[in-house]
Length: 341
Image (cartoon, rainbow, N blue to C red; front, top):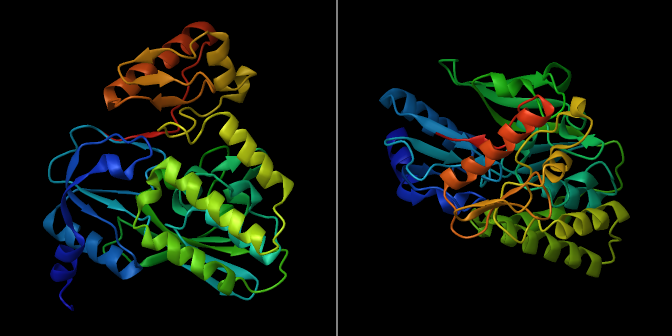
């Protein structure tokens, strides 16, 4: 298939429910939806959209996105979660942006490096992790990568470009990508500890992931998949490090995978002297509900889709938290979740 329009029409699906591609389980039917698997397919989609003047929205696994019940008509929603490639070049990995962050922890486990233990059970894909500078405790993505490959949508040629990590303006849950019309394609990651090649160890796991065809936007399926693969590695005599076991206990203890959510809704404001979750707890807002949504009784910085919640239900509780924190603590918390209009 040589014609770019034929490629576009084959990739572009019609009337796809965005709720199936969001960990919130919220979102109406998109007029158009695509899930490219290669750079060539992605660039073809972007080029044809530009030719037709067609609006598009690019996202990853949908684990940090709140979609509307009525998506904008005529818009193409492009998920990169099948854009998952993993290549080894000496002591460097090249990982494409759709690779689940949690896959890095398994790759590290099978290759003898502890660099990515913090990504275990961290929902989302690499591109989103770089965009948001995803973190857990003292580790963050910006400190692990060397270069990022991206496409600048303002460039008429849509050519691949590269930026060094030190130029990405990484800080707490922030990067340069939040302020530029750039789409992250992948990243090169230097490996400081390295025992043996991992291609054989990871290729089967990645193959099984791709066979699921994007279904790991569901947090319950996401959890089952990665805990099963960890058990399989343990059966092959890989020792599961204590930090990864602790992550499992922490996340399951806070019911992270039991209900539909996008995890932490707000970025913490450390000038406040406490996390957003702690402030919500002090304000006695945990358990507050609206429609099918509720502020998690287990973690104050999570708003759950408990029973067929709508985007409006989630946003009502988001405003409830924002207004209460502003009234009592003098600042408005910044959402971490991307709210799509």
